[in-house]
Structures are given as C-alpha cells and as structure tokens.
Length: 400
Image 1 (tube, helix red, strand yellow):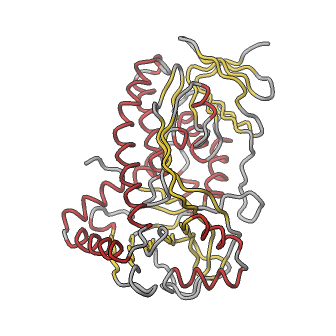
Image 2 (image 1 turned 180 degrees about the vertical axis):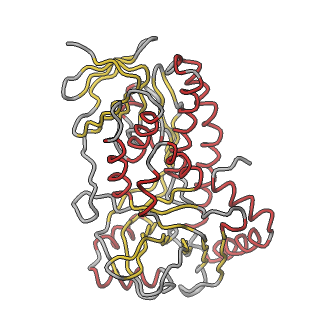
Image 3 (image 1 turned 30 degrees about the horizontal axis):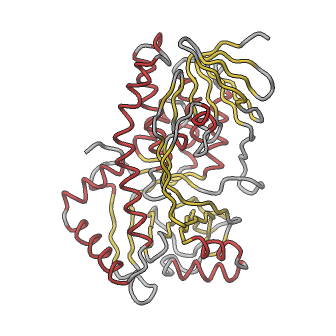
C-alpha cells in the first residue's frame, strides 16, 4: 500500500493538537492531525468540554502567528485582575482579599478567557483555511515505527503515513509516549475537579477569582453574559468523596452549596450548564522526545487547574518546537533538534509542575493553623511590590 509522505503527523486532536496543526500549517509544513474522537463544538451538546481556558499573553501572541487569534478575539473575555480570596477562618467568609492587577506589569490584560468547546470550533475553522493541513476525526494512530530518516505510521483506517516528525499531543495516557517506552512520574492528590458554568446577579467586571478554604480552590473565571445575565466558568476542586457528592447533588442543593463555597461574592450562583468531573494529578514525562517524535502538552506534563498554567505551558512547548523547526527546516525531526527541544522545555516545565503542586497542597489544607499560615503568606507576598510583580511576570511565562 502506498504511503502518504508528509512533514508532520500530529496524534491527538484536542485543543493542543489542533493548535499545533494550525501553527505548523501556517508556517508552511504539511500536516495531518488525527484523533479517534470527533471534537464537540457546541456548548449544549453531549460530550462538550465545559471547562474554560485563560490564554495568557504569550499564548495569545502565538495564536496570532498561527492565524487563530482573529477568530477567537470576538468571543474572548479579558482578564484584567486576578483576585485571591482566603476564606479559611472559622466560617466560610472572606477574611483576606488581594487583587493582582495586570496594569502593574503590562498595558494588556493578563489573559483572555474562552470556553474550550468554542476554542475547538474556531481552531477547526482555521484548519479549513489551510490547504496543507488535513484533520481526520474518527481516525487514530494504530502503529508507530520509527527509523533514522522517518516515522512510519499506520492509522486505524489502514492509511499508511511517512512523516519526518510525529507530535504526540494525545493526552496524559499518551499512546505515542507508551509506544516509545517512555515512563512518567505521577502524583495523585485524592482530589477531583468539577467544571461548569454559572449565572450570577453581580457582574464579574473582568475579575478572575480564586476562593481558598480547604479541599482545593473554587475558581470563577469571566465569561460573556449568558441568557442576559453575568456568567462565569467555574472549576471547583475538592477531595474525591466530596466532589462525587457534589457532582450527584440535586441542582437546587448544588446551587446553595456553590453559593456558600464562593462566599456569595457574586450573589447567589445558578448552574447554567451540566457538570463535568475529572481526577486531579500532576505528571511529568521522563523524556519529551524519542526517535522522530516530540511529546507536547499533557503527553509531556499535567498540572492541577491552578494559575492558568496547563494550556499555556502546552503552547510554550509548541512555540519552542516550531522555533527549532523553522531554524533549519531540513533538520525537522532529527535527533539534535529534538534534544534541543527537550533542553529548552524540561527545566521550565519541572519548575512549573513543582510550583503548581505546592500551590495545590497549600489550597487543600484543612488544619486551621495551616490555613492561617497560608493567609499570612499571601498577605506578605502581596505587600512586597517587587515580589508581587515578579510572581505575576513568572505566571505569564516570563523566565526568572
């Protein structure tokens, strides 16, 4: 059977895989992107991803070069302020509130929030504009055989592909990573996260709010108005048994529970979507490359959903890989290029995974003295202006 020769095969058509396909396609490489599951691109359709993503400044710039940002911009909610609320006292009410304002370090917002289902929709629209990119939903990677000059890939529809580079963007249980025998170190927290959208009577005014008490943060991220009311995307992290109880709770009781957990900062919250739930882990791959293969996004690293690091770290992977690919396109997928990619990313990724792990453990604290210490730590960091600005710059992706 004849093999189709291309520059890049991307295994995985989630947000990271679609972004990579658009970026490398816009740069002129021939790309096929495959995923066994077709993306859901409507909010209220079964299987839609109701989480949202805050795209930080470097991610926005990367998406602009990939031709995606112009499609996303009309739907994006700017994030001008990140508010940390500690409610770890005797009762569930704010005892410390600190605002981190983007104007301290930039003339642009920290980031722009978008629902994940909408990201998929607009990214697919961009791929349709690129004649050198093919997206094949419902098709997966069946076998992967690499040699010095190429990767030979058999797809689930029996198509045969010869690619100069395979990009594994196929998630935390990456088949591409496993095919190369690359291990990963995983940390489990006994936590789950619920994601859903809410309406509330008090406008969010572009403020992203994290409320810390115990079990994990309760995060509200601005969305455009929905059904004529202010709306936010929520990620609620809790210990596993409590998260399952919340997931199964009748809607009226759930509305009461989440309004209390949010300290009524935006008034009573009303569920405006179905609930989704998933386990929280940290994970880092032992290596980020193998012969003719690069791992990106959750195939390489997973963090709890704190500080908008997940997809923004993934876009950092793509930016590094694309820069090296364009530096000398004739060396695409060669060992030295891939080794440079790992060197560029591994140290920063390890530092960010470690940092988010520490933040998550602090947010889970249940003992009152530890919660008091957490509040004191936030107050101290905020009071030191140079430290506060440095932390914000590091959060955006600047290197310390």
